[in-house]
Image (cartoon, rainbow, N blue to C red; front, side, top):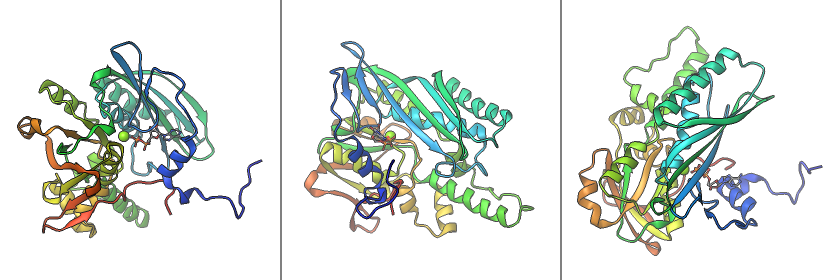
Length: 349
Ligand code: ADP
Ligand code: MG
């Protein structure tokens, strides 16, 4: 039997999410030469021919941790569970083609609720042109768990890793940042209001964009296509799931580089500014640490400056520097602060 407590046992919170993953996986070696990337990127990569590679990624969503069914409609949950995985496939510069979907359900769930969930899964499959390949179904004693695995393919030479950033590369991000977090704050506030007085209807007026970004995110396959059409291949890429700060640090750590980003260049929607003011949270903190944006953060060689600058929906937010210079933000008033990961980290104290 496992010991449940003891003085010399280590609480998981001491390692945090990323420390735990590293700890659990450090003894594993890759046995198969086809494996081009195992643990440590947005998706694993393995060669299926001399020229083609497949990529695979998986994500687990837990009720009460990742979603709250008091304000997340089942259809949206199904859609989002697929999208968050496709985002990791695109982050490798690959094209998704299939998913498996596994669910564990407690007895409070109905067939009608699951019809809604799978309607959302299907809309995502149709929209992103991927096939539902299978899954698994189980009962649960504690609410709902959803696990989605996605696979995709790419030319081997097109795959983009987190580790490819070079000094002087431009740092680019698609779309805007912080809106999904702002949407979550709005939904949480309205939930509290509702719990206190169920007669009150939620007030989401003027907050459609941020609420939409939380409930119905999209994976940026369009950005992958646009870059390809313009002959721009990123040198490194990650999707922004844990917050810009955390995900930028992943690129820098894997690439053994530093970075400088500029506060006044960060793309932030005006609704995020309104929510930030309402909630007395700095909009900068939302953009840096919010998470769940599912935008693409990538680096491109400086020679692509003109091309990237001209592309709609892509913002140059800074550049890559040597590792010793660290990862820093230049604030609007010109001071320099070290970028720290305060994004989502399971198990942190
Ligand atoms: P992302 O945010 O892009 O989904 P994660 O931070 O979840 O990536 O995971 C980072 C890396 O660690 C990935 O390569 C992932 O496959 C791996 N990983 C996460 N959890 C585990 C685990 N329990 N066992 C083995 N590998 C894991
Ligand atoms: Mg990712």
